[in-house]
Length: 167
Image 1 (cartoon, helix red, strand yellow):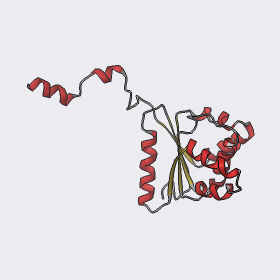
Image 2: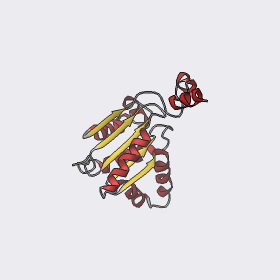
Image 3: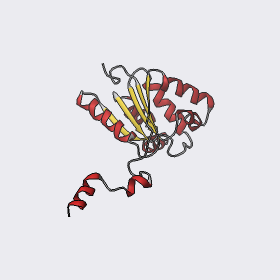
Image 4: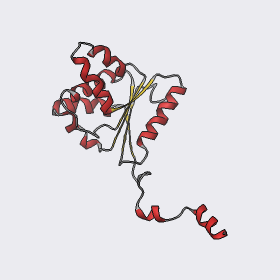
């Protein structure tokens, strides 16, 4: 059985550009091919989509969008600070999905940096407890693909060196 079928979480953390989003998308594609409903959304977009429904009493219906898929992929958690009710909204999604559906979250922040995002220590503790139980934590280290260190950028690829030498 896969992590989706076991209703487990995958938390992918690491610096910018190391492939966290790409890995999450690959997990989502694999889940789709296995017949699971998957929703991929940035953390900012998800929380923005939950802000407006509070005003017109459609919050519960909108929340279902994020709590019903077999796999919810939340990309870039913590890239922007959570404001207003966003910490509560994130907790509510985590709480409703706990042991009912799989969740994958990517973040540039280390797990130790996640609790302050919720803005409330008790809320953070409850959310992190649920997220870390039945979870796989993948920490990706290394150089970013978009901005490799200067030494790697200035070195010509091997194929280019051979081609240049042949001329």
